[in-house]
Image (cartoon, rainbow, N blue to C red):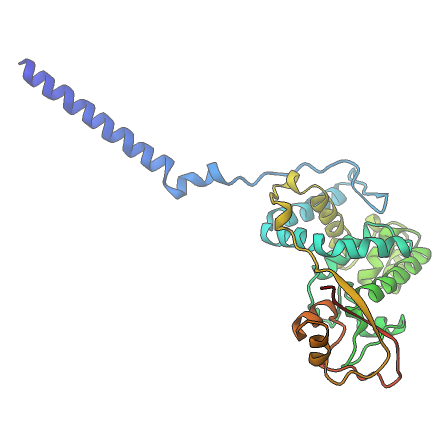
Length: 300
C-alpha cells in the first residue's frame, strides 16, 4: 500500500513538473508571447517649449498638437532611418554649423537641410539636388554654376551660403523664420498667396499643401530627437557615428583633363575625390573661363 502511495506521489510530482515546464516554455520562450515583453510601442509625451529658431510651437492648438505628435512618433519609431540620420548628422553638422553662424542664419536650419536630403547624394523626384535640395532654376538664380560638368548645388559651402540668402530673404518678406522655412518647401509666392487668401499671418493658422503641412513639424521632430537621442531610445557609442576624413583645399584655375590622374597626384583615387567634391560631375574639369575652383584633397 505504501509502495502504491509512493508511486502515485511520484507520478503526481512528475505530472505537475511537466505541466509547469510546458507552461514556462510556452509563455517565456515562444516568440509570439514574448513580443509584449521585449518590444513596447509607447505613446510619447510632447515636450513643452518646442520651437524653431526660437519661435514657439503653439501646442495648445489641438490640430498643431496632433501634427507635431505625428512627426515625433514617425521619426522615433522609424528606428533605422533615425539612427542613420543621427550618424550622418555627426558627419556634416560640424561643417554646416560654422557656415550658418557666418551667414547669420539660426543654427536650427541645419535640421532643415537634414530633413531635405537626409545628407545623401541623391536627386529628388522633381530634380532638387544637393544637401539643401535646390532646384536647378533657383540655384542658377542665386549664382550657382549648374551644368553637366559642374553642379555647385553639391558644394556644401556654396549651397549653404545660397540657402542662407534665400531663407533670410523669405524671412524679411513673410515675417518669421517658421514661414521662411515653409517657403523653402512651397515657395515664397505659394505661401504668401495662401496667407493673403486665408487672412492669416502664422504658419500654424494656415492651410497649406500636404507636404508643407508636415514640413515644419518634421524639422522640429528631428531637432528634438537628434538633440536628445537617448530620451527616444537611440543607443550608440561615439565610435558608431560617421565622420569625415581630414582634407585640405587645392585652388585650381586651369583645365583638368583627367580627374583620376589629378586625384592620384594627391594620393587619392577617383572615388575618394568625388566623395569630398561631389560638385565635380564628370571625370574632367572644363573651366573654359579659367574660374578659380577650390578642390578638397585628403590631408595625408
